[in-house]
Image 1 (cartoon, rainbow, N blue to C red):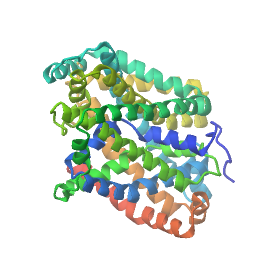
Image 2 (cartoon, rainbow, N blue to C red):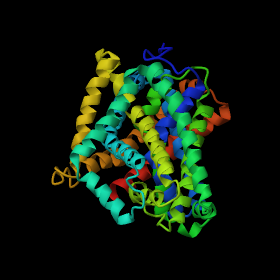
Image 3 (cartoon, helix red, strand yellow):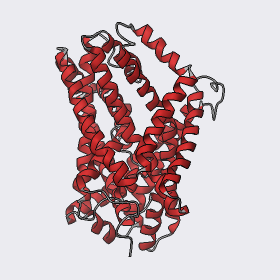
Image 4 (cartoon, rainbow, N blue to C red):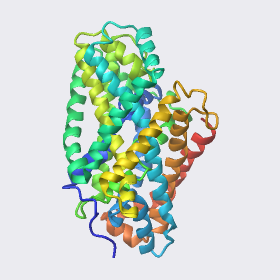
Length: 451
């Protein structure tokens, strides 16, 4: 008989789980990447393809990860081990949980650096640093930040510290309490910035940019982009949803809960685009600026608009919250594993992993300046960590979860845990068993060999 409750605590309600999972899923990619790739890849046509990809990959795999976690009631590795054993299969499947937790830990190392950049911009906006600045000036400021290891170290340290402060307090006093505050704040700030975007008078242009149905822009590459983003945006393949699922009450419906998370994640991404692009168009700037949109284009736009300093400050606070809620979810699987497997007290587990993750972040930030000549397989440390996790570890994690949940776990266990109708279960089962692995494998091969 598997455990009925996690030793780490339980979410107080289904809604808290939805907010926690949404907080994990909503990150930097939702705020700038999804709106950008939507606009340049066919607008409404791309959104339709993306939603189809979410239905065929994101939702089934999220349901799989959550049911594994809730059935195992432990860290990803230990849940996979026990669920496999319950089905009479090899306990070696726990390696999928180890790989996911390691991926999340490695991502935290460089994600904390980017979170530090966002905090630096919160400070700059509060001080009016970009008021009246041009693109060259803001671009030079960002390059100056990357070239300054001391400033980056300070902000990276602040971001890492804020993340670990939440984690050290545990599921209820830390994760749950912070989510109850941060997620409503995120939605409030999102709508405040949306209102500001509407006030620019260019909302219609932004709407057309994102939703005009232009199938001629929908190339094979655009479809692969949609596939990849549908997978990565939901924090799949890194054990987070298994860990969060282990704290989920038995009464909550996994299917409807996962659908709510997918909806909110997509909703935030679309609203972010409708908030950002009116500001970009009002300043006659390039909406296809890609990564530069966040740290160069938007600061210039805010710096040259009425009340731009205030709303620029609020925008970067919004981004900081999104990054923060994602960062804490990256570390939770590793912390839970140390507590369960090695008997660490939670504060000690947080201290050990926090320090190691912080040191990893230092190596990542130094790759932009002092260690710019240090390369791993032809890439700087920051880019190497990003590449290995995003292109290898996460897709493999998702692929193995799909295989494990539909080929290894006995169907009566998965059906019992998911708690859906017979027809819905059959649909989930065949999509997870056949469709999702093929699509995830497609993303994996494309990212590995063609990018």
